[in-house]
Image (cartoon, rainbow over all chains, first blue to last red; front, side, top):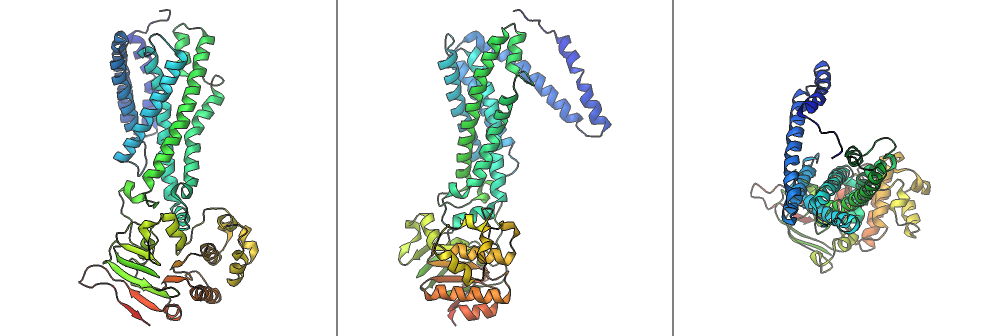
Amino acid sequence: MSYVSLTPLDIVLAAALLFANGLISWGFRLRLEKSIAIASVRMVLQLALIGVVLKFIFAQTSPAWTVVFALVMVSAAGVEVVARQHRGFATWRTLGLSTATLLFIGTFVTVLGVGAIISPDPWYSPRYILPILGMVLGNTMTAVALVLDVLNEAARRERGAIEARLAHGAPRFEALGGPLRTALRTGMMPMLNSMATTGLVALPGMMTGQIIAGADPVGAAKYQMLIMFLIAGATALGSFLAAVGGVLLLTDERHRLRLDVDAGAKRNARS
Amino acid sequence: MLRVERLQVAGLPPLSFEVPTGECLAVEGASGTGKTLLLRAIADLDAAPGDVTLDGEERREMTPQEWRRRVRYCAAEPAWWCDTPRECLATGHPRIDRLMQSLDLDAVLLDQPVATLSTGERQRLALVRALLDEPKVLLLDEPTGALDPQATALTEELIRFQLLSGHSVLLVSHDEAQVERLSHARLLLSKANGGDDGERARRS
């Protein structure tokens, strides 16, 4: 390995920068001290654990272990999508929709990217599969969470207009067309923005990692292009599936708007 | 003829009644009894067990789109899904001009942003919107709630014309004189509890 290994002391030195967070929180009475402590301890524990687990899995090069780990990643991402919903949509049905979407997109895009394009030997080598699945899942998870949240908010805000369209004989996807488009745009914009500025303002994490590990920057850039396209496709497909699934969750088979089902809030009787 | 059988609306006893073609049924009851909920349930906008048929055709045999094209719910505060009324209306429809004139609405209103229109203009335009594709049954929730006496008279005239040309109307109105003028029968709603059967229709 041609890179400088980090000692525990190096990590502690970097962690000293957290005092800045603590001081700002204390000085402005932001009461963030607890969050800073929990978040940083979680980060250290999760990364230390993942380092050990990945070392084990890479040593096996067994498809079974790779699949098990991939499923754990998908499940965690599905739960995170539900946790990011502001109101409504915090239900088992949402968990099912987001997990199914992430499983499908993660499998499809990772198999396409690693199996068909990168083609390492063996093609299921966890060294390639898991990091790329992680990047695809992380970005798709953000997109799915945004799409569902925006869709839900917009449907509540525009409830009168949606029901007016339904009352005039529009099917549910037409009646919810406005919220659907807003949600899709919100889901796809972050990736488009980051494609437009990547390399100019910030070097992406994966490319930075490869360069520090001693890879040729041109080679690292090519990898980054590949991964950006994979992520762009994944977020678009994920947004689409989440938006369509979200409209179905917000309505029933008789094309009624059912904000009550997912919010758990009872519709007040009005005269 | 609209026939409602054992329709279960939240908070109300099961309701059964008929609205013959060309007649207006006034739905009455204290605030909060569920008059709006009843209209929404008939339009299939809220789930409600029970049978609803129109001219012998069962609601459940139709797609909800077909049903709501025939049985049109008009909310008390109509919402708009476009920037101008024209975008929300079937453009170039031959009935637009006549309906606009009958409610004393200037055609220029069609191209003004909905947000700049007065409440009364929006309410009348919503009635034009609802009548354009000629639904068989109108479920009118306070159709003149935001209108001055003159506009109210024109709206009542239009409703009466609809009745004469073979439409049926369910009317929710707080204006007793208006109910007297328009309705052929009344349906009094009261809460499910208290042993009352909750429905008393009488011919007026």
